[in-house]
Length: 88
Length: 223
Image 1 (cartoon, rainbow over the protein chains, first blue to last red):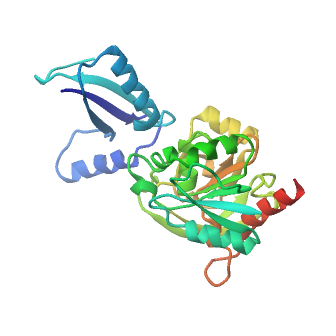
Image 2 (cartoon, chains in turn red, blue; image 1 turned 90 degrees about the vertical axis):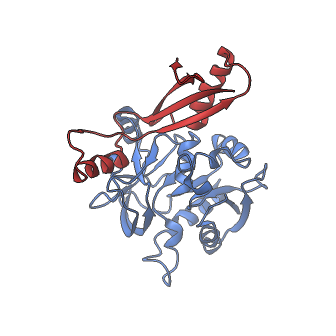
Image 3 (cartoon, each protein chain N blue to C red; image 1 turned 180 degrees about the horizontal axis):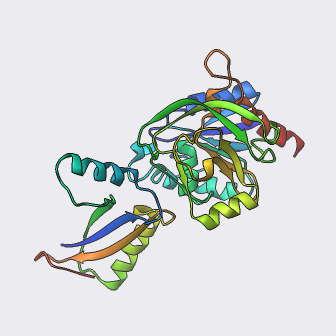
């Protein structure tokens, strides 16, 4: 079974209060040198059969319709290979 | 006049919204998220709460509930629709209203009696107010920060589509202190504060919120 991953991130111009909270907590715990954190979402979709171009187009449409809100978020789609490698 | 109040799994304020409708003098019709028709209502309120546990994004799953299909069509056709808090989030997710609601900039849940200025008293839900009138209604949410790109914000302001603004300190980081907006036609209004909690002296900080519900009544009578 193939796996397709959809990563969703807030657009750069949208404030990310959660990421900011994490960024503020890191130095308190001694993790220095991190100047910013943005928090996103990762969706792992298990796909039946082969990952065809048609299937990818369908997943992109799902990402645009439900998994992300295009008003405030961007997304990327990639296929995860069973061996751990990934290609776009 | 019949005003529908939709209940999603996780809606909290559907009871109060129905009560506000009745106090205003209309008949409240409870609509279920699984309904595929609107039961001949003359207006609809999408209430506050945490539909589907706020999973994915606030309002993102409710937006695809069966009842939303006829509702979105009817709203585009001019049916008065009021979205309060989670209902506002559902309206934005449905693209009936522009922009989106994100987590409060201070990251804390807010629960305050909030002063608002009515910026647009021409919508079907605010016609009973006068422009510039100040009202106090409860505001209670964790994800009430209204955001949109600058072009959208400019257009909303130029077209007078900001319906209510926060007065004083911005309670949640909403861009340009926007508390509520309307669509081009003025029949769909969404706001984060809760007018349905300010309809009786016994329980509310004021009765200022009742005017939202009486406004839609007089709009229907004069139509």
